[in-house]
Amino acid sequence: MTKDDELDISLVFELGETTWKVLVTMLSIKKPIGPRELARHLNLSSPSVALYHLDKLKEHGLVTKDVHGEYQIDPKADIGFLDNFLFLKQKIVPRTLFYAVFLTIVLAIYVTIVRFDYGIHNVFALVLGISGCAFLWAEVIRIWKGLV
Image (cartoon, rainbow, N blue to C red; front, side, top):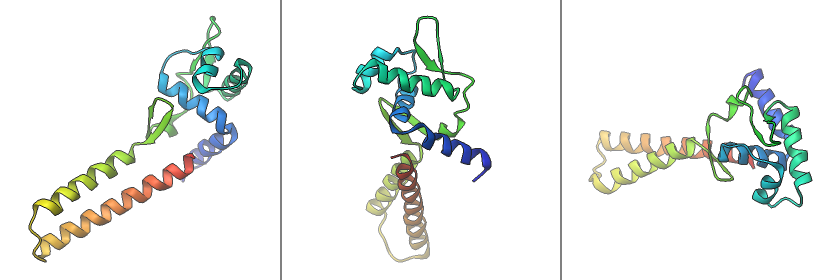
């Protein structure tokens, strides 16, 4: 882990859970949003709470405020550590999940189609497929636990 990665991870912990949800929401909707709309979107108690979290993100240089009072992700913000994630609605999904699902499906197809005969090629393919799936699923679980 590099020093930049450590700074990125510490930023996530420094933001806190609700501010993190605000950031993920802003990344997923990809358009400027005001405090009122954000409060409704996340079921926050009031627009003031949304404004607090937006200002917190602004202090960290992650969002900017336009002349209409709406906030958006700062294009100059250093959020490269989030490149390995997809933002779907209010959820963040590790890209590794798609690789794990793909390899698991390929392995399942292989097991159902190929007649297994304990030949060296079949054993090698099965060991390679199972170990690849195990490593990918372990990585998905590790990443997901770090986000929650």
